[in-house]
Length: 116
Length: 115
Figure 1 (spheres, rainbow over the protein chains, first blue to last red):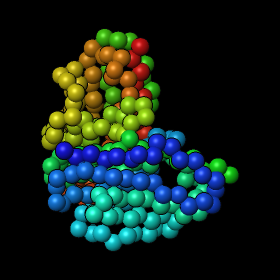
Figure 2: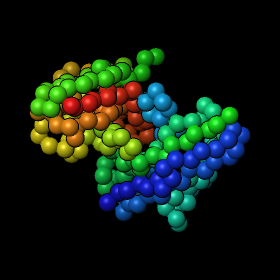
Figure 3: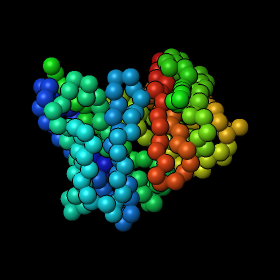
Figure 4: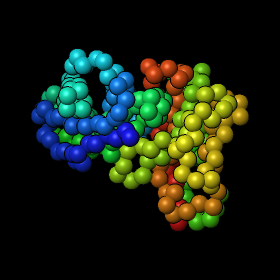
């Protein structure tokens, strides 16, 4: 079975703080993909990143960075120097041949509130 | 260009009624997906189409739910005999194709409330 767990329901930080959103996944597939999406108050999910299971290199994009660790089945997301515009619900997701590559399995999400 | 659009943005109906939710994908996208998002949860897969055909409908909860995409573009999700438990945000997404690297782009959703 495939499963994604985002244990942090809500996080509240003050602007300019760094914040890490945790994501732990379960899958029996050896090849799989991991994703992060952002859902701002408007409701539309915005794609942030896709990672395949063979690429464990950390990725940095501006203030965003992702740490993929197969040994702990985690794909954590860090926002450096957070801004008010980062306030949103963030979802981690998984897909693989077991459930179908085109079916995204989402976690329950972490609501991030960044205060001025 | 235009993103995925969904209509209506909000739908309130009474228990037992029939509803239709519409999705207009990004132009040229051949794959279209429906997800359902209950309050405080992540989206759950319902069905996806490649062209006109449903490639995988394993997420549809029961036979009251049905979706069509007759011309390979616009899709309609149909729910018969609505129940209060059907209340959720229904999200539509589209992607250029079915390659694993084809990103799913989501619409704003339709919030369905069944009274």
